[in-house]
Length: 150
Image (cartoon, rainbow, N blue to C red; front, side, top):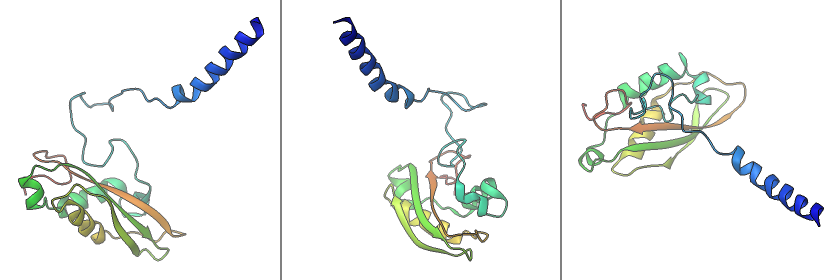
């Protein structure tokens, strides 16, 4: 009888282990206060894989986006904030195709994010690459790639 209870306990622990492994600790990136917002790059500290094909890397890509992105009037009026995601295929010759809005917030944010992503110029990858690019809209935040100061 003891071996059955040990077996049941072992099975219970084995079933709970994957759930414990998937939890992420609530940490704040280095140099950032707990209440401070991100930089407008989708997820702070995350590397965007397609950025390696942009001249100057991820920082240069998001600098370009911040200069070109205009907060849509309707989104600003309705105080819409958040992240849009644009998906596209980067071809072996450096051109983009099959661009689409995967996630939008409304108020013209998805269309504006798509317009700006169309302006990006990438280097030629060895093989075609499917990519998703997060574009963040934040009102009143100067470190964002779209602010209401425009």
